[in-house]
Image (tube, rainbow, N blue to C red; front, side):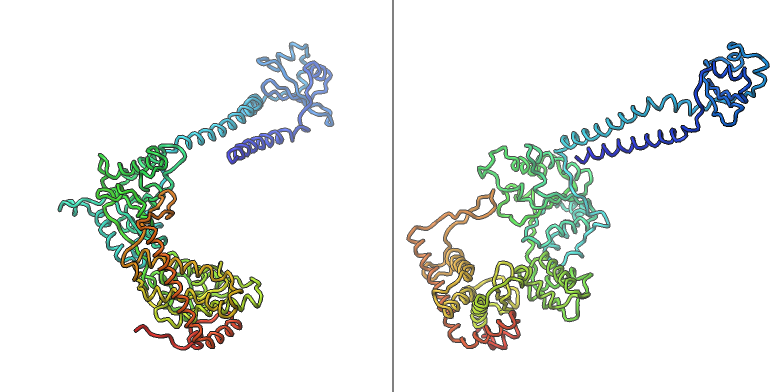
Length: 614
């Protein structure tokens, strides 16, 4: 449709120009002389009515003595002079002498225009139309024949798009590993002299948003080499063999630009384990993977070409990709710790006018588990919120609210709920806050709110004061009890008959946590320190949907009993804490009903200090 409109517009413009030319030529039609035959001109000359005759080529233009009369135009035979014509038609010498004769050279361009334009213009229109039509067909044909060509995005050497390690905050260990790759690309001779071979592949592994693509670009920027970037999904097409052809084309382009880096993002799209029974040996993804394996460790050496790939699912990759000689080096990029988060926040805070009360170190403490992309999104949401409020700077309130927005979703203040449902939500969240506050191994409660966010009717926000890499049995037991805080309070205040669907997600999370404690972490005293079940994956779906049991039905009953023991114990502990602090809970609910949101300082003021870990 786009090509048709383009061709139609071109033809329309040509016709418009032709119409303009014809209009100009016709605009002087009223001034043109009358066309008469030569016999009438002869009679007028003999009668003495002609004052002057202008001869121009084969055209005679006669001007009569009568000033009111129009000029007359006569066509004579080609090759005959005006005198010969007069003689042949019997004009007397006296009559001819009375007429003034002027000879003009014929205007060549007017002659050619008058004779050739009527034939040329239609021909030109047809040729232009055919040109655009064939051009569109050629474009379609070239696209059809160009399926096997790769179209990688280039970068690295371009100063405008150049990234360096200075642009990457945190990830010190990862950058240290990749600095050797930069040295390989800058001075390969230094390593060749000692017998060291340049690595063929580097696999970047980490959670989404940790900066794998940015690190790959920074390696190319530091080394000053070409950077060819393609996603794993771009190799796969509906036609068999296209992916393998694109792999060959990509490596061919990289070899010509060597030293260069090929970066394949989300390589698990084509690099999943083979032999899963899906698609057979001629599956398009398997063909593409086979070609990648051949290119990385084939008969021809890829001198100066390093393949970098990124994935957040290294467990599903084919073993042939991970063996030495292909991806020789694997770099794990962890979620940033508190210090790294502060550095990342400083990078993303550039260009955003922050108020003096915004502490990036405090913000780093409040965002455990956030990736670099999450932190960038957090500050961006804070800036958007400041603009929405008509402010020129970003304050602490916008930043803290953005944390909750990233974690839970936007506030739904306009959601209309009854006073009874609001009171039920307040007691539910107060139950979580009470239990979490008085259990030393729970994370400190930072905020409690009855304002709906995302899918939650209300929320209790608790976050650790420092990064935690391990969970102990005491932490799990206290977290389980906190999950039952809302359920316990609803039963206590409103009775069994008035239990709502509010605690459903808490019960689901508590059951999953208790099951993991028993089956995965060996935290059951009755069943002993062992795991139960081998978790396998259906690779083509990319999620865990099958668990191979390595235990008997009798053991399965024991697992269920242990899960029930943990859950019931958590409920009893939550109930005990709620009953012991009933008055404080009522006070907390009263303030929640008035303010709707209570911060950590007010929580400590109402409930008192937290117990310390012995």
